[in-house]
Length: 65
Image (cartoon, rainbow, N blue to C red; front, side, top):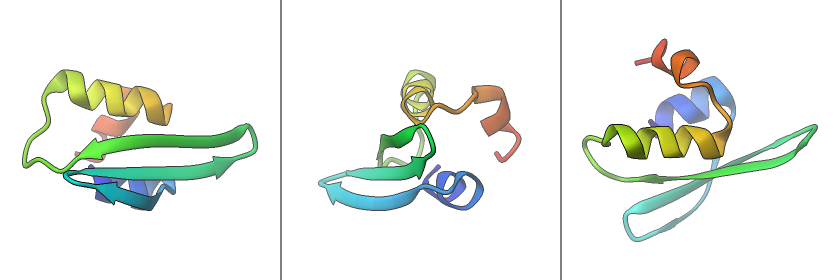
C-alpha cells in the first residue's frame, strides 16, 4: 500500500512511529496526510480508512492491486 500511495499518488513518507508509517502530500487545496500500519495484510475497514484520509476513491486504488 505504501508503494502504491508513493508511486501512483505522490505521497512521501514523513515519519514512522512503531509499526505505523505517516505519509503526506501537498496539493493546491492543502496538505493531505494518512497513516498506514505495517502489516502483511490490511483488513478491508483499515484499507478504507487509510484511503478516506488520503482522499482516494477505493475503486481507483483497486486498479493498482
